[in-house]
View 1: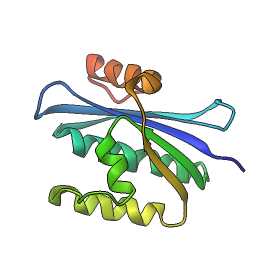
View 2: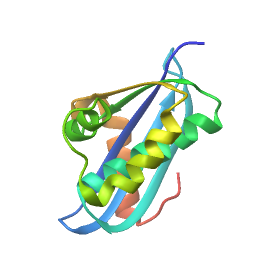
View 3: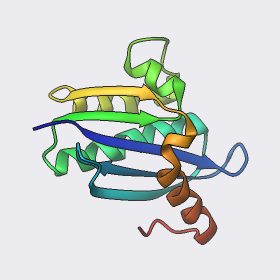
View 4: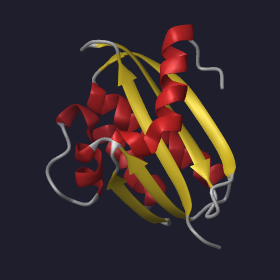
Length: 135
């Protein structure tokens, strides 16, 4: 089985503000397997990106996918997964869950330009406008 691609994005109107995230999971040929939007309340950009990664991984696991390429527009998130830099203290509990969730996965996390995540960016902004987590 090939890699699936998980594209995630978070959005905050102003800091700190109401935060939303979204993501899509596509198979190796670009076919849509799943998608999600979530509302996280008032939070920081790094918290929303971290929770988006966790939510996306949970969906991939439910889909029984074990080889996952994550693309995010958060360089910091990619750096943390790749062992570069220290995770903020207030995110460490969530990162423990991410590490546990990802321990048996072939998981690659990389930074992607916003243009690559246009579909996810659209979903997140749609959630913000409608103030909903409906997909």
